[in-house]
Length: 120
Image 1 (tube, one colour):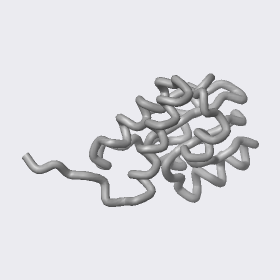
Image 2 (spheres, one colour):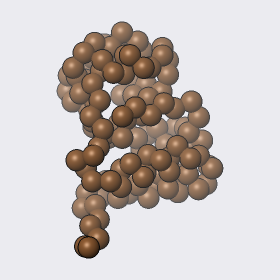
Image 3 (cartoon, one colour):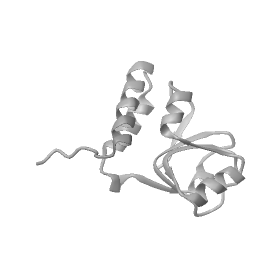
């Protein structure tokens, strides 16, 4: 079977930096996110705001190894880290006084991976 690698340089750099953060900070959450991002992109998470609203608490940090979509309403101010955001999702998160960030930014601000919830 042919070994297929990622062709997007952003994803390959992100996966390697997540593995390095996992080793240096002894944070298993970054290893898990890297494992999920190594899978084919058709298996990436696509999470709607209604699901984030259902499972996240006020002020919590949520990480989505995929894309955040704008379907539903968000009533809590949460920090959301993901690969990509739809325009509607980003607008609704900011309107709910939440924060949109990339996974790279979250690794820089929280290298230990403490108090992060993974949604799929």
